[in-house]
Image (cartoon, rainbow over all chains, first blue to last red; front, side, top):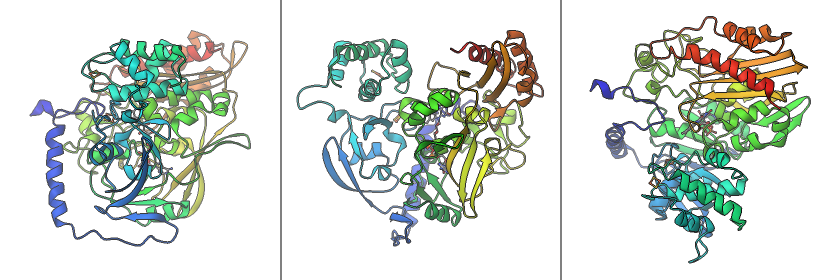
Length: 212
Length: 327
Ligand SMILES: Cc1cc2nc3c(=O)[nH]c(=O)nc-3n(C[C@H](O)[C@H](O)[C@H](O)COP(=O)(O)OP(=O)(O)OC[C@H]3O[C@@H](n4cnc5c(N)ncnc54)[C@H](O)[C@@H]3O)c2cc1C
Ligand code: FES
Ligand code: FES
């Protein structure tokens, strides 16, 4: 047991994470069983548009890939879990769930973000684009074409996040050299090490001059 | 994540009152630090007060400086034209932090108030006086590679992880705070505190105090600046040691200098004596070496962070060289 104690660094998820998560979840179930019915309280003057008690469902409006949704979520739901589990848009991946890998990258009002580190309720009224919203019907986005052409993936797990990030990288104007692409794509980890091909795909789209 | 009540503030006063009235409440801005800690059970607020709709995201010229709203994003701030012109050191430090995605979420206020990355703080199965006062400091006798050289106590040897804050310390910024008792201004050096006997307190803010903005005064440090960050991979990793260096040169003579270290203390570590040692000297390696020697006086390492005793002065010399030769 001794050598499993100090975790290397908080930016590498620990080995015993799964066990501890399980323990936490089981104590949470106990808490759930004990919780009295959710208390709904009226909003105090000017404090809030909304007051959501623990476990209560909060109304939420989102535009996801051009489709308007009226939803109801528990405050704890991350944007990532909402997309995957409520909207069944499973293209966006959960790699680490702690902001350390970029697999969950989506665009919120055009900006790339890690959907695992934001609450869905914080995004009320925003426009979300996921990997499913990038293609135009059956016509793939130029970045998707380039990833295929350049073998920008192996297992493919990081790929939706890489592509969302790559599109943003060009739109932001941060794809002007190999060095700049590497720096501005550093938030997307690829365990298969497809990095050189990913950089090549981005460079091709960047120099191709197509609208991304 | 523990269950919590979520409220969204539309007025600063309401957010402050709600926070002051409830010891178990927290403000949430970008959420990139708070939600991380909540998922791990390190922080378990019962109520989150979402401050993102408050009007504090502007970056503007104010008097003789720049006023950067607490809700300005790290990415927006790093690319702001006025920040690049007047405080390029701040832009460099921001861009050295986290990833493009995280900088699109992280706010200036949240960045200063992010908590330590000490592994004992992060692991609820291990002792940590910062997380659980009285439980002991696991790092003191444990794995202390990432830990402090300066200003620590026998209760806590953790370091502050923010890159941006190292630049703000060097640039003599001022933090604007609004609280239950009104507004006040804090010199940036007085925002964070040393651990002493109460490491559970990272800062000198009172409960309910909301950071509304940070002011960066105009200075001569607009050209010869460099933020050097030493880390275990080229990007997307916290600093082992970082240096914010700024010089104002008259020909080759140093007229004024600013220096601060990151990754070595519970707060950004301003090096006033080392700065003084540089003033009036020619901008040569010998002067930089002397400044580094002065900077390291009083440094004390633990079992696994001895390497920082060499890394930090070398980084200071390199940062000053890069600053001096910056075009
Ligand atoms: C994988 C990863 C890598 C990272 N790498 C780096 C790095 O290399 N360098 C670096 O500097 N940082 C790094 N970070 C940390 C990141 O910069 C911080 O998480 C971010 O800046 C916090 O800002 P936020 O707005 O998301 O804060 P939040 O998480 O919303 O808040 C943080 C704390 O500040 C409080 N708070 C927020 N705003 C205010 C306000 N206006 N007034 C009063 N209290 C407030 C909140 O209550 C909370 O306690 C990294 C983070 C991750 C996840
Ligand atoms: S899932 Fe890894 S960054 Fe979000
Ligand atoms: S393709 Fe496998 S992780 Fe990137």
